[in-house]
Image (cartoon, rainbow, N blue to C red; front, side, top):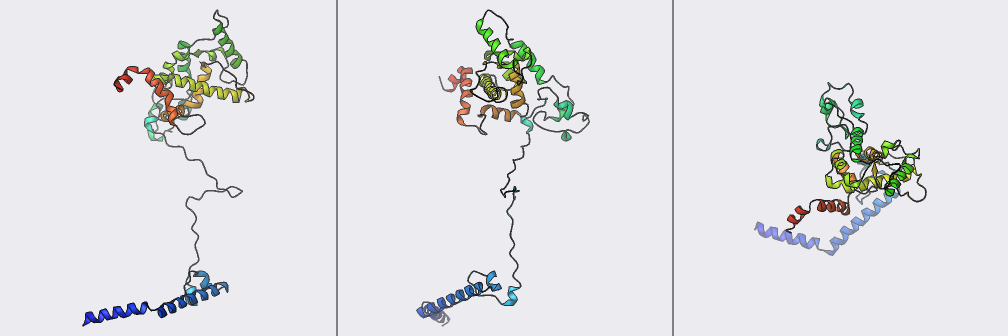
Length: 314
């Protein structure tokens, strides 16, 4: 009996909801409420301003309880300039990793450890300043080695060649004359101030500089040599020659002065990872492309031909 009654009630409810008359009455009520809400909104009704989604207006008592709208500011809001444009500050420099830092002073003249850690021999390691030029705090208490400038001077004196004034070899004499004309006879070149700065190392003897001073693999010596000359040519054209007209065809050798410039701009301010990244990438980009690896892969294949044949089953 109960089940039969439930079924009849369900049928009655379905019939009632499916009636056209009931549907039209419900729709008419909805339209009436929408019109009243719109009218109240245009007339400045406070309740309509708070509820503008078509619902019927609230009673005056309920209107007073509606809180004001709270504008949530955007997260990490950026400061704006005088014109209202957001200012995007540069990102903070990343912290140096111990694995890519140096235990010795990497400044050219060796003045970092003598100034940055002067009088701090008794400080704890964590309290010592850490950066790319001398990240290992224990280096402050170790015996100080000769600076990069002295090491480079000794190596250039041992492996390099001083430009002669008069020799039988005309090509060698022309190179010496070009070095003096472009580098010594101008006051704007701060890296060539004496004859010692003109001592140069040819490409075929640059492997020791690559390995011992720059801490790069020996087969990097040719791409490194070419990169140094390219960066120096750009620097010379912009800062020494004045940047006007065509670029000067400089002598294709790395002098002690040119290496001084390269170290101060591309080596001293950076750790091991940054040096490798900056050596591979193009100077005008901040990322490495596939083509940037080709010169080094080519030198690797030329430097290890036996290993390459074994790798490919030759």
